Image (tube, rainbow, N blue to C red; front, side, top):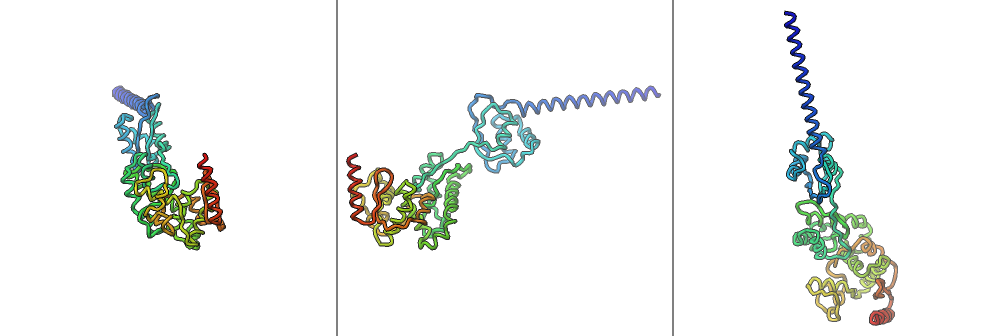
Length: 348
């Protein structure tokens, strides 16, 4: 009987040993399979970059299913377990990625965690109109009609400019990341208006004592922006415009003629003498005061130039044909400058 008991316990130990061996073998096999799934190359070297988009707010499950659809993981559960084991839940960045090998699933996860997104940017230069800005947005794949529809809604700026009928002048010129949203035009317009506010709202304490409204500052700044590319001239040109307004003189600035012609669809790159007589509320050769709205989006320096013009009695300026201007206090001085620089232009 004792021998039988010893024999039975021996068999139990052998069975336990076999069971533990099986578990160990399964663990080794599982570990090997896990390493193969997570560390073997999923994107080969030399293959074209693979576009992979992570929408804002996407869960690890949703990302895993997109990876499975592209053949980058055998089952979504593997990616979810990998995310959990690395403690990266909630840290995967939205955006557009260009995955380029050699990359394993582990390395793909790290790319997403670091947010190595493809930066798609749009640059809006100073002085562009709504339509010109929409065209630039369209070149980056946005729907022009959708952008214009958003830009023609003044509600985003009504608290600063109750008279605004659209966002002309308020889409701040800058470089922006293209929003990765279902409605990128709407997101970009809102971002541009927010950037305008970041620049202008700190200056509101200076605008109130100037006697100008925010709207008038932006209109004047849009004229300054389009009259000169020379930063040092902007406060001087702003002063000339303010001096002329104070004296009740016509502003007589060519950019308003160009804007009027663009609105009528007949701008061809040149202003003719007859264009100075065109009937338009934007024709500052015929109508006194400011034009009825901004004629483009001014940059920060043009806005600050209107708020801090130089002290001068100058009332006139004419192009020197080199990007700068000759300024004059009297009409006779101005006429001599016009004659001199026009003659040089014709000789060239």
